[in-house]
Length: 85
Image 1: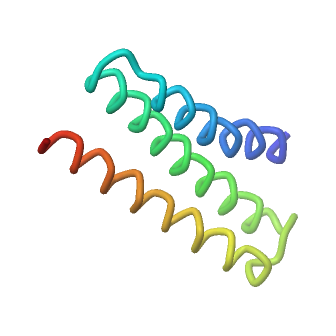
Image 2 (image 1 turned 90 degrees about the vertical axis):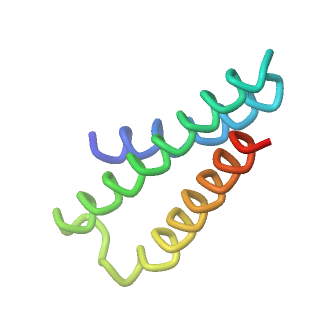
C-alpha cells in the first residue's frame, strides 16, 4: 500500500509539470507547478514512512530524498520567479 502511494505521488510530479508547460495562463502555470511541488513533498513523506516501517533502509533513500529535496527547491524557484515576472 505504501509503495502504491509513493508511486502515485512520484509520478504525479512529472504529470503536473507537463500540464504546466501547456498552461492556459500564468496563473494556471503557477497552479500546476505548485501542485507538482506538493506532490514532491508528499513523495518525501511516503519515503520517510517506508524507511521508518523498515521496508527500505535509510541509507538506500539518502540519494532519492536528496534529489526530491532538490526538485522541491527547483519548483519553488520556478514559482517565485514566475510570480515576480
